[in-house]
Image 1 (cartoon, rainbow, N blue to C red):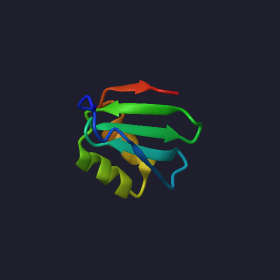
Image 2 (image 1 turned 90 degrees about the horizontal axis):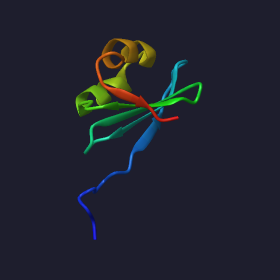
Image 3 (image 1 turned 180 degrees about the vertical axis):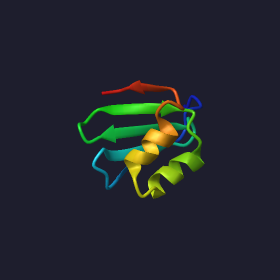
Length: 79
């Protein structure tokens, strides 16, 4: 019996960045998960998939994070 929460697995991509270690995205829930180099983990909510895809392609992950994510989307620290 499944209670409507299908595809809840979040895959993480290792990225080249002095600020960020991993980026994960949960498509169904539009949750972006960012693991920083200092091992803190934050979730950002209601992030559209196209923003996630642009984030992965950005030449500077830290700059993209500061300009397109922080201060725009609600978040919570996970770890």
